[in-house]
Length: 527
Image (cartoon, rainbow, N blue to C red; front, side, top):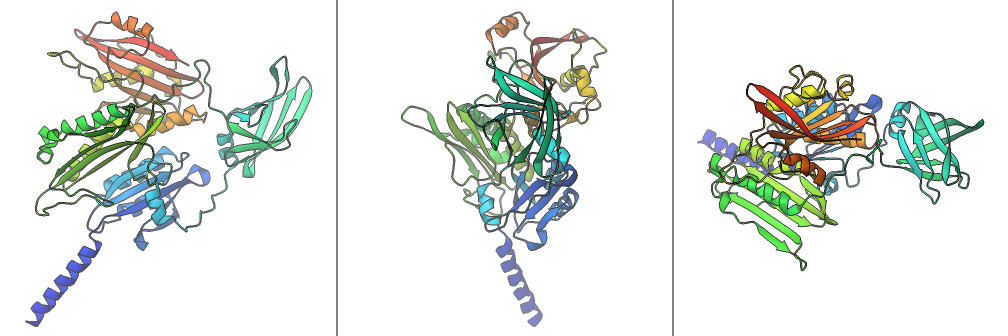
């Protein structure tokens, strides 16, 4: 009997240990710039063997691949500096995605409070590595305005040129032109000339602000101004997001999956709960579906009957900001108010969890452009099926390749795409075969690249090609052109960001005409 007793005792001990560790936990991964524009990665974990401090991306990816959960999946929070190269981020995100134990809960610039309180309280801030002169220069390029009553504008070019206003005459600044050099520790020296007058001086960049003397102030402060493209005043700001529209789309996408997955049976019967304030403005909205699942608190949802599969999905929306923001939180503005949306998906079927999460989050991550609204079709008609071949056709045209003469004219800035290094493209159409040189990425990467270009930083072009429709005019004069277009074509919205050279906005319709394909540009704007 003794061997049997020892075996039972061992099983009891194993069960106790398993129950002790069978709980959800989190990781915090911080990515910051390091020497030669590389990335330094720090992994915070409750498991000491998983903790890494200031390691390379390759070492971090290897460590991420070896992480295991305590009986359930591990929520991963990634906080990355905006200057981190996309290739480094892709490698880290791929390592997280390839590890079945890990679930990406958050990806952004700030460390969410929910994990900062746990991992970073009492942790001294590491001393950032010294920047190289070229890194200071990259941060410097653009227009700066003095933070005083004079509002003196000074402009630094990527080619090392400087334009420095000295005084005003008849209400206009008289500007000296010359060259500058960025040195160590954010010191910028310059020499400029105006009508034989030579001016020498220096600025110091500290905490994103330039400090230097003016005629009246020995240590004035300059703040970076938003980039102003050549004509139209820059790319349009992200339009306001209607919270009710976002919430409705997210719920509809869950319901649309019911017929394909048994675990979602009954989700169409769930009625969202909506609350409004005294002015009938949306205050909060909640949609939750449970199938053999407990409602999640601070931890993940779990099965009520562990012998059966389970599934849980919820979409929550509220006005204002929560003092303790959870991971996977989306924030946007609407009519002067801040709204936040939180999506949670749990289940025993990992692939279904991934499918639902992607479907629900898609309207939150994709660009909600002012001229992109959901098309409404008359009963008995169907939406034209957008094609991967159409996107490839447009991408080829943008790169200067249109042998069948599908377009009436070539794309004017095609050389900016073909001659640049690492141009990115995002499309919501799967299976697109892109021309050589264009790299397909998800929307987060294209958005980050466009934002970098918008702020005046030097970066390779970014292209966006997404579905649209004929009845989505943005302006009255565009509506007149749409009225002359025959129905039945496949419509796409196209945006091309090429730094300070140009920014293109187009709407293109592709139509089959017998054995041939014809592409027509409905409207175009260029800055």
